[in-house]
Image 1 (cartoon, rainbow, N blue to C red):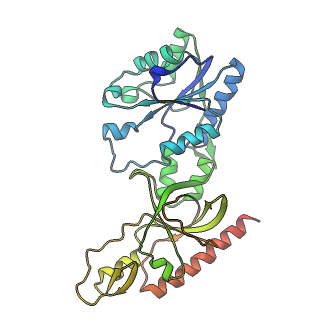
Image 2: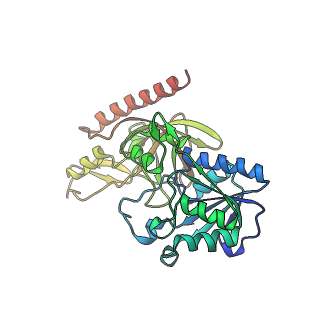
Image 3: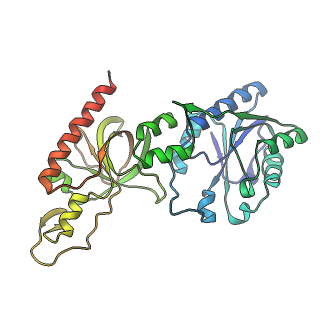
Length: 338
């Protein structure tokens, strides 16, 4: 797969079959578009082209950025494009100036004049250009004028739920990772670098890998405990992950009776640490693994949500719950093999 980050350097692509979009998650709806593109490329003896944008338009226009979250990073998206057989990806830098480009001007100057499509393939609800007024009807009209075919792919449904990036994000936000995975067509995952934590989990018999995620806009599942899968040195391990703030440990510190020192939770003899915080996003306990992961990059796949994140009355209660969580996660994997 060839990635073109400067459309001015794009060389002629024979009989290009083109689609346009941001494709967050590269879910089953997007995959249906890619499947149709590959079919059309065979018919016209051409090659497939995905035109996408970076950064995300909402980031540049600062529209709702406080709630903006992505299912996957740009790098993960590119890997999925290649996995699903796309030949070329054109990444157009999204700027405020570009955002003012009228829909027809965008299609004429960026798609028709530079890529010369034989076929344009879009989803059932596709809109593009300034104020998103461009749609399939516009493409169909321009296709008749400039000699390319237009194809619209119908909505994809899973258990009577239409597939969309918004529905996947909503499912993750409410903890319904099973539904999110169905709509994606593969397990939802996050990738991050393992960084030093407080090492308290190790003292409880549950050492964890603390993940530092690549940017603030990554979608994190609803706070709680999940059955997961991760790969280390080519070997896949079962795991359980917690997303959230570790409220039990935070409460102990905020009570003024405990402190963190040299990575250990110790009795507090002097001043309280009422403002101490543990801003932890994701920590992963990998089953049957021993070794140093600090500084390494892990991909963690979320498979099933086990429980909510809750507060416990001390470390012994937390440890007892973690033991129950581990058994429940192992039971999930046993059931999955049946």
